[in-house]
Length: 81
Image (cartoon, rainbow, N blue to C red; front, top):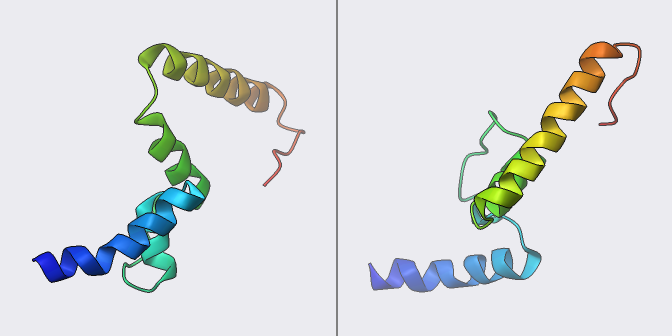
């Protein structure tokens, strides 16, 4: 078990340095099958959200809800990809 932990340290260090979820680094390294349910940006949002206080998350949620309503009421506007 200690050997596995030692092998994972560089990947975790890369993740920390790049401020991205460790899962993305493992996927790019070919050590983990990509999660196709969420895009990389969606996973990055979840990664950062876990460390934020609920008050910040409520603010972010409000923004997301407003953007969703905007696109629902303005179907001619295409969201940027």
